[in-house]
Length: 302
Image (cartoon, rainbow, N blue to C red; front, side, top):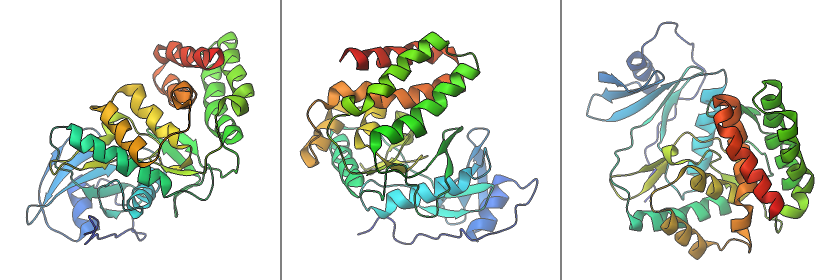
């Protein structure tokens, strides 16, 4: 049985109403009556619809962000592997998705998640950097801009479209010194030899830190807030390791059971963590610079 059965997608163009509340936006975009709303953060509100259904209403933080996230959720969901919240409606300012009822993490759910994540990656993408269907080229990872420009070669694409743009921004902002940036540039120069065996483009979540992994009350993991694109499958796994994930060893065990990783993948974790760490350097400051430099030096030493 498809978990996406009954999805209502009202993603056609609608006028943005200035001053509209999250509840009013949910009513307009879903066609349902709102029974109540509860703010969760500056951009996120839980809304109760008549009948007891709960939805999440998210306000866009940047132009094009809603379109990118909605397209990413659909693309991941279309693979029929890892579950995602159904998109119930959207316009340029608001995104309405199902509310995920969460429960405690478990080893059993982690094993299943690992196998499902492997199947998601195996669903593939047209090219490295390919956006989801109907997704914009100018997308986002969190609040940071992220360009999706397709390419056939992962090492050169990763350097040109992921690592160097953020490295240059960090230097321009004064967050990284030129001598420190040179360490990362040496990694970029050697990336073709450090990248390991060639892999086909995988269908990535793209921002797979623990906060975007929801452990469902039904024992199934849901993924939220994707920065979806075609990429290297080791990138999603490296992100899970970067900020921690409950039962990570079980997640990796399930993944390896379904789709064994290429030899030496643990030595390449730092390469794949370099991009998200540089994103954090740009967004949050020098506190992440040391970690970015550490994984860069580790990659060169390996």
